Image (cartoon, rainbow over all chains, first blue to last red; front, side, top):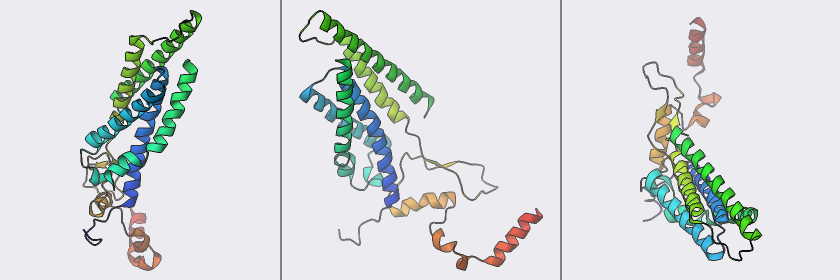
Length: 105
Length: 133
């Protein structure tokens, strides 16, 4: 596919869609961090909990919000859904996790 | 946020809060009686898992379909709030402009509404008409 055959996409709509996705992930991952702290998860089990919830949330987003038509709403499916926000979400998760872990223990 | 999502949200917060307090009390007790490696009771674990699951459900239920108010009010149309029945905005450009057309937003307004492009006589006539009404 050359550049002339590529579909032109609305950048403002892509940004708004990503914003809604990130807000959803932020909420879920912070609560996941708090739950991990309550359960006193340590090392690998905590990281696995993050990965599991992150992937499940992404899948639910694709299934229920995008109705399995990701390219209709985002620019680059896998990159936008998983890799773009993973560092941000991971830092938020570690913050909530260590905070609730220290409070409880 | 619908009623269902609000209810599930508060129930999940209650569950997580209660599980947190129970876990805190359990660890305090374990410290007092010198248990070296305390295992969290199953009910606290299940309560926190349930709280997390309910929170995820409430977060997804809180997603509302996008609605728009029409910019140009048409007397014949009965619908005040317009919707395409979608949770997100479509990105292909030919579809993305559908919303502008639906609500009556001029996508080229930055140019079309410049003073040199406005039909002043028509605007004056419209203004006079609105005054007379």
